[in-house]
Length: 219
Image 1 (cartoon, rainbow, N blue to C red):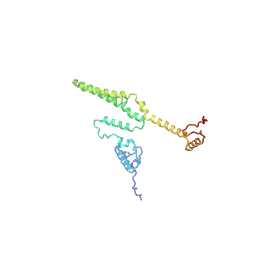
Image 2: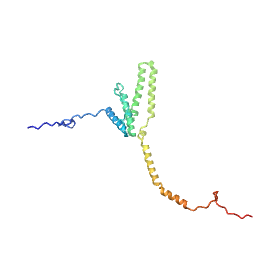
Image 3: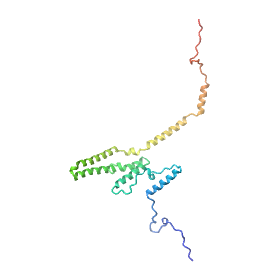
């Protein structure tokens, strides 16, 4: 007599086969759905008077508006992604990694924009010599981007130090506070000093505050 078949179902993700890869597990929900779930949960907790802080990657207030269909503007979508990375930076090193996509002297976005604007001006001249004014406008725009690049030259070292100075200052201030607390006298010691000072003899003074003078006999 055969035993009845079990009604339990083995999850697909836990089943393995010999010589083949494991079955594909269910993919995680997309980022937009994760953000929506986290935001809803945070709102409910805040309504219950809990203090909730979401990580930057799930905080809708710090995220750029999603670009659902960039179409021909894929470069703009990439720049929005870089903007999100900049906003999510937690220290100078992570901020430098994100900003480097913009300011790298050879491969950064600013250099690519400068080259594109310069090429646009040259192409206008090639297509229509009478449109020199428009070509000049693209040339001026390219020079403006070059000026922006000049402003940010050698900014890597400064970006890497962002946040470290305030941390060092806070640590030094904490040490000074501890030293001040160690050197401070207790209220009992202060009271003892006051009592000692009040019990010490003092020179007699007159009502006007001057020391008494010896009287001389009248003639």
